[in-house]
Length: 173
Image: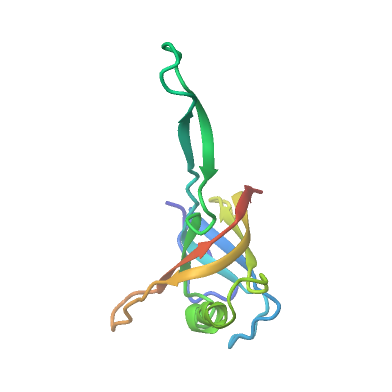
C-alpha cells in the first residue's frame, strides 16, 4: 500500500491507492445549507450501475419444428440503475445534512416531473502517484437513499456515508 497523501480541505491523511474524487454538479434551483455551490468530495468506494435487458422468444408456435427467434423486450428502468458512493467526511462540513438531504427533501416536495432537481456526478480514481487512473461521468442523477450511520466515541478517523443515486446514463472519461 502506498504512503498516505494529504488532500485539500481534508482532516488528516488518506491512504492510497483507490481513492476517488467526486465532483457533484447540483441542481441550480436547490437551496443548500452548505456554502459550496458545486462541492468536491472524496470517496472510498464507488459502485457502478448494473446493465440488464429483458429478452423473450419471438415467433409462432407449432410451425413445423422451426425454432423461435429472440428479441429485446426492454432495457432496465433508470430507477433501478443506481450508483452507490461511500463518501468520506473530510471537508469539515456535514455532507449528508448540508448537501444530500436537502436535495432529497426538495425532490420529495416538488417531484422530478420537470427535471430541475437532477444533477451530474463525475468520479475520478487516483493512482498511486496521485494522477488520474480512470473516471466516470453520470448524468441526470438524483439521490434515492442516504444510509444512516453511527457516530461513537472512538478512534475512527473518517466517517463514511453511503449514498445511492439513480442515474439515466453514464460514460467512461
